[in-house]
Length: 136
Image 1 (cartoon, rainbow, N blue to C red):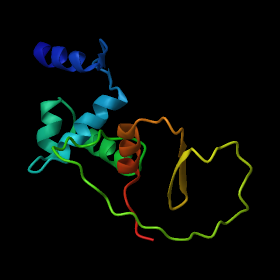
Image 2 (image 1 turned 120 degrees about the vertical axis):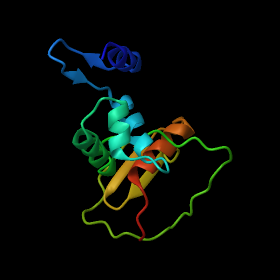
Image 3 (image 1 turned 90 degrees about the vertical axis):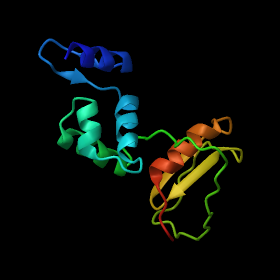
């Protein structure tokens, strides 16, 4: 158990005397990402991190809902995703904003994300990955 606690602390998990643990979001995302690897199971990954499988499943639900941003998968070569452009009729008149034409805007359904032009491409990829793709 001491070795497991040392491992978890090295990841940044806070462990209290009551055995309660506070998991940083980036560690949760890393653990969830491991369950998405080919051949991985929730039970096996949960055992590796001394978690109950239902807790890990709850984190997976958060990721699916976009409330937990998973790290972008590491790949050896660039991957391109198809871009689908479609017209969406606004439900309400657009509000005045202070955005400039140089802002980056990502719109998926009713979700709208506006980013500064100097946002790193890795962060943009993480956000797009978290939003998933939906056909128009």
